[in-house]
Length: 382
Image (cartoon, rainbow, N blue to C red; front, side):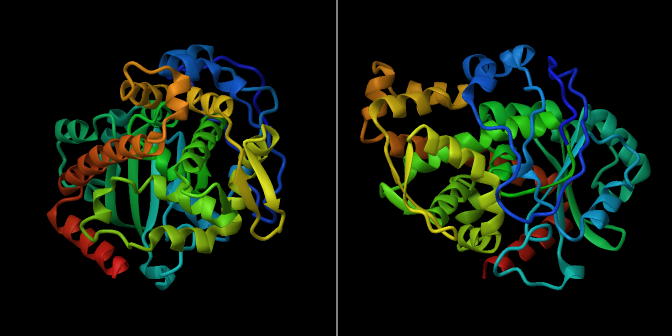
């Protein structure tokens, strides 16, 4: 998988690097140890630091290689598209197992997100090949609804499989991973996903995203001692804070536990290098080394909390600091209301992006498809 030597990248110069995924056998895998030093340019400058970002020689992120038995079939579905696609992420209950979602395979919707270089070019070519996937043939409307977010085409049949695919630019996806600008794409990748078509930059940025997700989860934990399962449940819950579907019955209220329960071994593999980083830095201490479900306690000194806060995504960090206009980072780190402020900031970020996506879906999917999708979601939540 390691085809990358040292190289400099910009949003407009990133190229695809395709790797052969391996099946999940154990959560321990060859992975480049996590270090903030790799991400200094984006930690200090955000998106403006991409020109200085360097992928380490022989970088590997095998912890993110989470494939399924239907890998070839998923690749075949993606392969039906003529328009160029840089990377594809498969997610949701149709791709990876979740408790409470035991429909026959033929009834499961397969969820994908396509990362493309130019969304306008993709839609223009895709409309010619798959006009029935769209609610309108107007390129002006499609491009307007696309914006900087994700454009979804749900409930389309591809190779006799019910499919939903979202389209986003690599620039927007990478921006969210590195700055948490919306936490819509980044939130999905904080949970196990299946890379149907991948590139190393996506994996590289997601290691930073995973580390930040664990940072937030530890800050939000109400107890200073917790199990590994509880940690992954806290991480999973991050992307649902502020998701309006959780408040209107559009999502299963037990969704977080359902995901972690069925995908626990995937989480263990995905977060193993990040956990090792926290343990090496003495931020977490193992109190019970049970190989099935370890127990940890936090060891967050003021210096440790400053280090963790100071390496959070720039946009998110700036918004957090704005809640403390006259305070130093040390004072912020010691504030008893820090978890509350972090939770509020995440909630406000996600509620905005989830509402925008929800409204956008009414137009991009069409009224009938939107109603069908909403009814299906409500049935799942019951």
